[in-house]
Length: 317
Image (cartoon, rainbow, N blue to C red; front, side, top):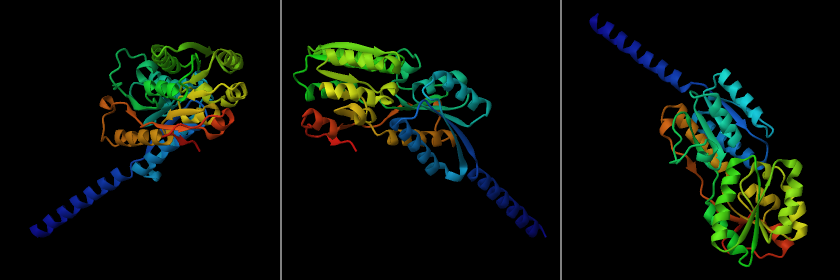
């Protein structure tokens, strides 16, 4: 009789352990995704993020609430506050304004940024060491700025005047152009900044940049990425080449770029999200991650401007 009771207790314990294991395996997660605007780079980052999370956690175990802010920072704030009210398990913030809004909305829900150029600049962190801390981490789309400047010199060794075209409303864009400007000036090149406020004055500012420049540099910039057709329509007929900070912009108006894969960047962010949600990693100690850059060129614009691509560059497309 005692033996039967013991066997029964063991069976019940095993059943309980199996039930607990099943419950853990079936844990469901809700992830809020705030994407600043729709354009190829950010879209690819979101796609990669979702694919990685589904691969790690199981498609049936995760629900994504994707909301696009149409380029408006106030809308980002409304979206982030909505995610907090809905008590999502994690927020993915795609682009700087989305990250800033998410951080302002919650200090408790884990936040992972992607398509962020420089977290110290975006979050106003002095002497940024590579780890944000608290409830924020993520990935950066920054390709080495010194290498981008070197690339401009390699492609156009006789350039004397370089205009740096960017949106003044994006602090990471200002950080990029200031860094590249300093490098180019050390090479004896005359540089001028051409900031535009929004799409309303972009055309006039781009025309001014063309008049000044032998070559134009544009950083990773969401406003530029959404308006490459306008920029290309001015610069290509004027015969002024553009070195771009990322592939999406280069495919629309640039000659060459040192770019990362935004899909791969988003995928890495998704892997980080899965690790945070399962408790495998502590977001407060998780350093910002990066994707390796690849040199690429735009064959159509190179041909239109009579440029021969440099060795070691891959065609975009």
